[in-house]
Amino acid sequence: MGKSNVFDLLGPIMVGPSSSHTAGAVRLGGMARKILGDEPVEGTIFLHGSFAKTGKGHGTDLALLAGLLGLLPDDERIPDARKLAKERGLSVKYEIADLGEVHPNTVKFDLVGRSGGQVQVVGSSVGGGTIVIHKINDFQVEIRGDYPTLVILHQDLPGLVAQVTLLLATAQINIASMRVSREKRGAQALMILETDQAINDAVLDLMRKLPKIEQVMAIEPL
Amino acid sequence: MRAYEDWVIEAETKGIKLSEVILQDQIQELEQTEQGLFQRMSANLMVMRESVEAGLIGKRRSLSGLVGGDAAKVEDRRKKGTSLVGDQISGAIAKALAVAEVNACMGKIVAAPTAGSCGVLPAVLFTVEETCKVSEHDLILALFTAAGLGMILTERASVSGAEGGCQAEIGSAAAMAAAAAVELAGGSPRQAADAAAIAMKSMLGLVCDPVGGLVEIPCVKRNATGAAIALAAAEMALSGVKSAIPIDEVIDTMGQIGKQMPCALKETAQGGLAVTPTGRRIQADFL
Image 1 (cartoon, rainbow over the protein chains, first blue to last red):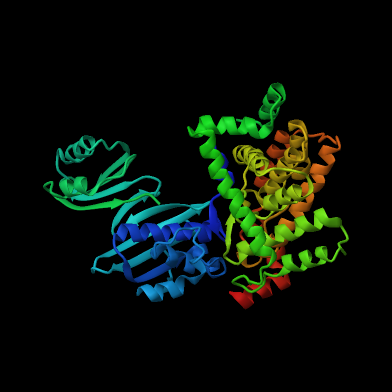
Image 2 (tube, rainbow over the protein chains, first blue to last red):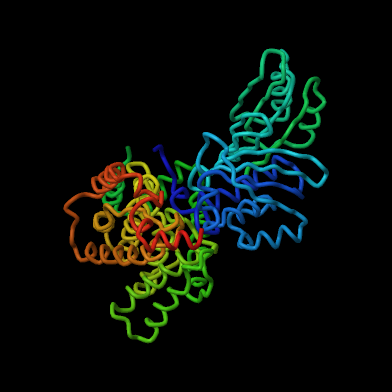
């Protein structure tokens, strides 16, 4: 294993009992909420593998729900997530599912937001509270929530990537990593950018006005 | 690969504490100020203190209903003055149980190095605080000594039960706590390394076999025995007892043993206590 630091060893400050099954689960719920970009009102949580088998004893169900409500892993209201969800008008149901060849601690969220928007998110808790979001709707992604992240759905077109990066450059936003993929030449494509600085609404508005851009999601770090 | 020995030699040469060497390393590594790192570490100490207090009076039960209330039992007996092992060891046992119970009951803790082993380090630190005259500043510094050893443990072996068994979790926590205790009690960097080595050696081979896969049985009680081992190791080192095998070699062998350990005994709940008749029954009843 590579170099670690003192806070990898002492921390996180979290509600127990398990960094992967509790703290990581809260973060997965939180990322799903951010990707939905709205207050969730309805959802199905599909539990896979170890989340399904030992989740109950680790409070994984409560932790995922707490994350959907926007709670952080050290929030002592996590055990009361069910009550809190009721108060806020979020109703979820849980299902045990086989999500295929994925990490044992994997979950799929099927969410509906207050303003009617819907999203499907698949993510895994990969140890020590770190997470990876693998899938948003039908798109394979890899989002860890360490950086502000832009997910842009667009038509595969020459010069579009340059237009997006130009907007970021003009706003003094530095790109930390970038991944571009597409279904096939000229079809729908996906751009995922992690940035060092937060992405403000003005930049997002300009991006949404670019031709052939279908959807722009800005996900804050968690 | 880094070695704890390098930090020990640096501390000896400069005539400073191990924690100060590690703090300087982290200031460079994380590109943060000393004050910033100190503040962040002090937040950890505060939550550790709160988790001890919450657990000692705790009447909460875990989700399975199997854990809770044991810390208070040990603390009550200690307060009556009837402890068999004396104030320090009984206090450390009570505190370690307290924090581990808080964790099992979905309370707030600091993973140290993991959530499952979160009771060992606070139990040992606050026991030393009650015994020796130490300041808050010293306690925070000692957390750097502990975390520094943890970094070496992660880099040369593992602190994950799934990778290395319980020796990697409670064993690492005990070694980290032993080193921190020696520094707090005024021992030398060399003695801190010896204490860490002695503690780790005492935990080698311990498997991770949680009943039902939950962080409850035997994890909570192993936090208490881990704390007692850490204090025994610190006591030996402070008395001048040396570890024949140096700390980095002990860490390497812990990593090797972890690799040799079968998967059934690494957090999968497919071996050890988890598959005893009672273990299976508990799992069936709850799940």
